[in-house]
Length: 283
Image 1 (cartoon, rainbow, N blue to C red):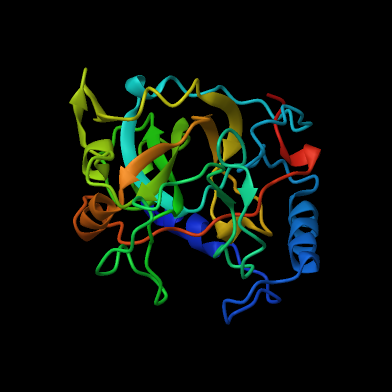
Image 2 (spheres, rainbow, N blue to C red):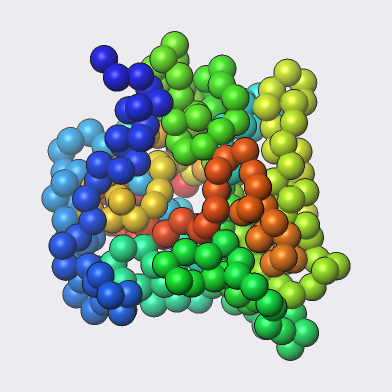
């Protein structure tokens, strides 16, 4: 039998993307997103999948009542991974502006900060920040940070595999979500501090998750990412997403991408917003 870490790698990579997604990066038509959503419904129907993520945080309705115990609060779990997505995966709070359909592979889609920024915050920077596919993060960009916690006895590390081990076949998982806006401002928050890790009361923890960005919206869902645009995520996750954004110095995000224990070097893609009631938990 494969180890849990190996299985996690298979889970994160096995779900195939749409053959009709656009491989040249151009935006796909609404019909492509509709086809992907329909395929997701077909591939999850009557198969026992739990509720899915991401979702519109302002909509409490849902018909997926698969029961699982919500994970304890994050300070009673072990931090296993930190990563972020380019644009917010969730919609709600201060991030409701749709970025567009993207390429069908999770690029150039998701949700953006609703507010306005000063010209100084948007001033160009030199060098590339967390580059991928010949693109770099820019001042004004929105990202959604996921602090992932597990009930398994693990150490923080790369990928979802760090959240699982061979001795805990069904760990409870919790994700603390925080949407950030990248600004050219050395007085803004330092991402290295936001992502600082250490032990607290015997648990691996993210030491500086923001506490001033609104009361977290909690719900039952799943793992995310564009690999699940057409396939259900099998992992059950307790979500806690803060509704307000925080502003972070873009240069510090680049510093973190250059050196972190999670081996994160770039932003992840965004899964299509899950909207069908059968795939959402009641909130």
